[in-house]
Image 1: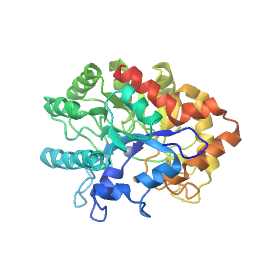
Image 2: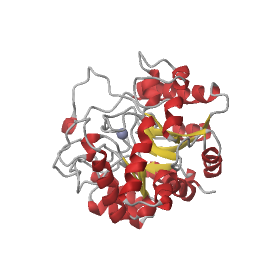
Image 3: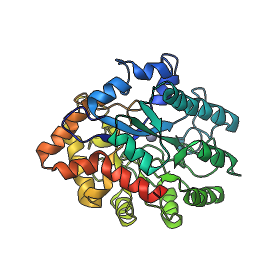
Length: 346
Ligand SMILES: [Zn+2]
């Protein structure tokens, strides 16, 4: 998949399934045509050396709903959440079905490595919020059999298991209650099924509950350092230290408002701001525990990158900044493969 001088990128988060399923998304076939809209499709991914990543099933809250507790959207209706999750999950499998072998939903680390070594885009099925999971965990078991290997307990709203962090600037990420009893059961179930648990979007109390409960490396798939951008969606130094202690990892979110010191939604944000975040994360958690979690097709990113085809510009900026070839391989994909191997088993 690498068509440039840089190591292939495996990425912690994208929302392309939602875009393809939307009114102008074009469906699974559009993934194979070079588009102008959004950030991610197969032709642009090849140009950018993007070899795969976590493909999120994310359900937007209905627009007509008014905000509930603590300014968050209310919990989703269970039937709605399940129907929408099935639609996005089916979209992922339809992409695989019409890919002529160029796109594969992977469920083991060995399979992931084979795809990265070959010319096949690797996709990990990820639920961004457990809104579609029932508290008997029947859906979890069925989705596991279908290939689910990564789960965020929440997006930015409450569900039966936990509550998502409310997005604020220059406030503490301690915005609400921790895990419910069902949430604790869900963590234990993910541990026993070896489904990766993603702590991005959890509020701080939920985060520390996961730290206490889980026996897997802690992973924040698409979050940055709070010390450089004081958004509640980012990770405080003590959260980063807990991630390092668990030998987990952080994926750099490309959203300019989670990168910049002023959190402005400004597409003219220079690449140096991303490099500075990488520097900080590497210094805090180590070069073996940082990767990318672009949030392609979900957020506003720097126009210097533009879309997935601009990834080599980031790699080049990191190289010029002093990261050597081995460092770049770790940041690009090796750390993700290592953490997934530890979490999933061989
Ligand atoms: Zn997200």
